[in-house]
Length: 270
Image 1 (cartoon, rainbow, N blue to C red):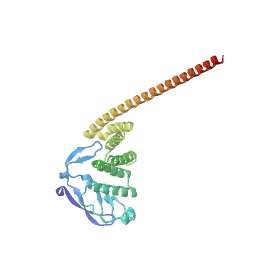
Image 2: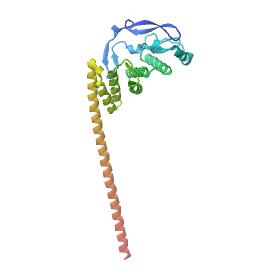
Image 3: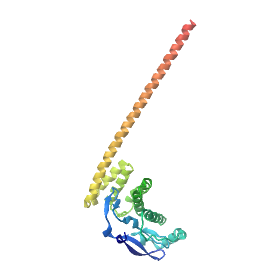
Image 4: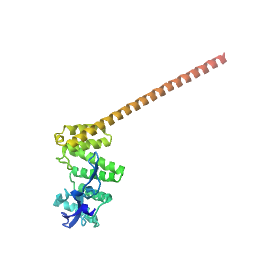
């Protein structure tokens, strides 16, 4: 493990404290598989665990690409809402999935109070969903997937690309795939079609193949759901029809009994 990581010296832009954080050597990366929402599973060390830099002194946390983007006017927000409650701790050591989740949640909170762009927040939510997937905690995975889906859908037409490191074709595909996971099939098909029409996709054959595969899968799933829905509706109609017929039979039987009773009384009176 030690040979897969190295120390990166960092200077905190908020408190000017110098600290070290771990980074993964590119040569150490060994991919096991890729999920349909871009989540990568690694055979060895996972670089997602080290994607957030955390200052041990003041508690400022952000992704590597965002860490030095904080404005001077925003630093007081960190001091007031984070540092004032912070107990010094060092996240510059080896991290497991639980420690990584702590770091991402801290970065998510700070990104929110700093009012950073939605795409950044969406990217953190997406990676949190992956971290919970590693832990097989499905409810929390779905929770952060839903956050990511809502944020990315909003950001698609509101922010400049790249968004969370993705071009328009990649993000359209991701939104389509997340919609598929939540069984929003019509929306999923719409976004997959948008991805296929995007000029950027012609430069990404692998992505184009993924879009087509998931589009076909979604279409089949949607057809199956619609068929099951029609069958259920027909069953309900039949049950209502049968219930109505039974009700009419009961009314008819009651009427017959009343007529017989009336006829019997009339005979007895005579």
